[in-house]
Length: 286
Image: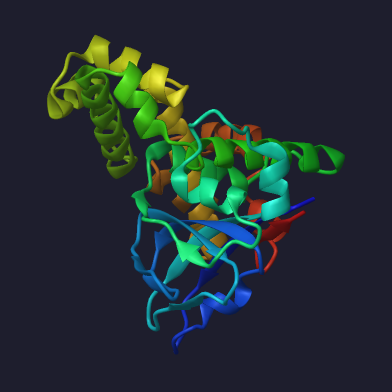
């Protein structure tokens, strides 16, 4: 179908030659949660840091890339064939990022690396969703296909140019406040800050923060807290070091019953069975 998603989680004793996993004539997105790496071509050299995203293409020559030893590496990659991009990205609108546009225009694209960008809350939520798809069977292909276009819309277009035309400085400030509020929610899962405390810490009124958070994140602060709590609990259960009660308490649930109900609604199974359903190496491809 011209695309793939892969989840990676490993801690190598020696440096890993990461570039061998890249496919020729494939544009790859790396959403890097943890671990450092490096990508090198004839013209570019880029250090990939934790909590960042990068675009790169293995074109006329291989991309030299590796992952450092002695670190925990956690990242999700989305790979697109050039043919898929040419068929599906809009042309002539002047909004596709220059890096991507050069790939579309070239008969045989050259290997290249684009500058990275920080992982936004939206990208982190996208990674979490891709790791735990809410559907199965025939519906899964349709669900992943929708996520393919979501990744492309988020990373392949020149949103900065659009913001320069249509957004004001107030919009940028609001986005920074929402991202700061999201980080504070993640940092206080067990003992959440009140809406008033969040507003004080990010520098705006509780009402304004609540409204802008919902507009930009597509969910309320309470819904976001619930989601990141359950994501963290799922991670703890996958580690095998926490039982259901311990995971519930760790993320701030005082009632195991409420936690189990919320977990089942999100992941489609009870938390006690969740680790048994996880494959030894998580990967979803099409």
